[in-house]
Length: 77
Image 1 (tube, rainbow, N blue to C red):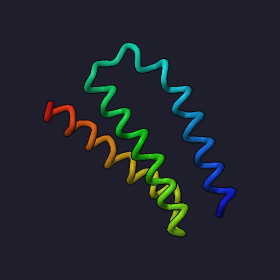
Image 2 (spheres, rainbow, N blue to C red):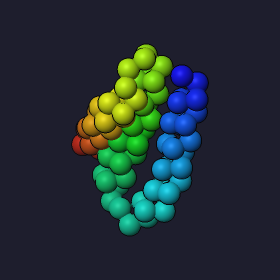
Image 3 (cartoon, rainbow, N blue to C red):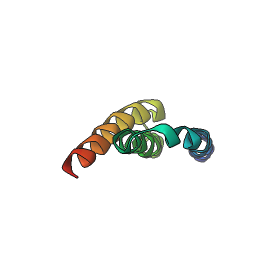
Image 4 (cartoon, rainbow, N blue to C red):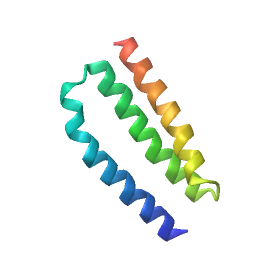
């Protein structure tokens, strides 16, 4: 289980580093939604791995929840 958590963390960090330059031409709303989705993906994958569930399922659910959270946060500002 530890190897899968480390692998997921490495993939999440790599994806974040590769996506970072893409944010320069995005609106504030798009950046918040993307940031929420990225954070949700990492948290969901880690939660799925730690609880013995599927990290992929956790990542998909986390991405959806994170994107919705980022959008709602932007709308409240």
